Length: 293
Image (cartoon, rainbow, N blue to C red):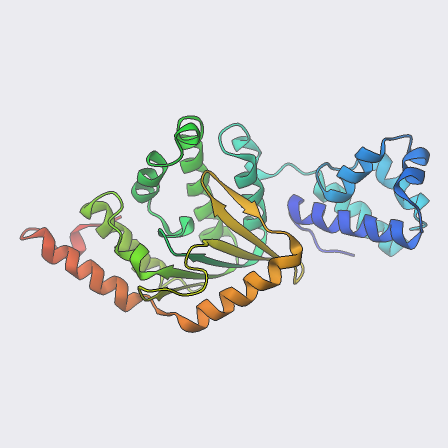
């Protein structure tokens, strides 16, 4: 029997299993649609994971595909129930872009999160003030509609990843991004202090790349490994959202991250140097312990 998973992972596993079962049964989509009394487009959406499948339709599909063994049938029925569960991101459905919510679901169900960001501090590592500054400077249309929802969603993502989840975390950050004074000196100091604290987290690793050209310099991306399999997903950050990469090229992103991780160095000395420079520039009356979070 399969172990319980989140709705997004369950939906992904179920859609793959149903497609494989249909192919084993050698049934074209139009023949299945006729038996199910449904449209071909509905079956395409089920197999793509765009929609969930009802309990009744799932049982009919399993009968059509000859899935009668108690173990396999029970596993797929359980996946169907798990896939229909409401995700925690549902309460943000009108407050954040759909693509970002889909990514957040995958992120919260991942056992490994690897992120490369050459431009700014990765979102999971941002303080609220840093994130708010970036949100205010974002795409105008998205800023007006989603700003507050985005910030609330980000805070909950951070809490879930660092408190509830057990994912292995690795962040590759360009030294230019570490040095960029987003929000001004005070926000920057607090952001650097926060990074030093996160670097002590038992599941987190933060490394930096020196200023200069390297492969992937212009592409901020995230690799997720799902918690119940070795399936890798790749996402590229876009203005106002996150785009999932087609499976055919995911391997290239995985190799690129491996190269970046192997080339980068521990970010803590770089962060400490930048932070010390900020305190010196702040003048008397500002002490390293005074910035807080």
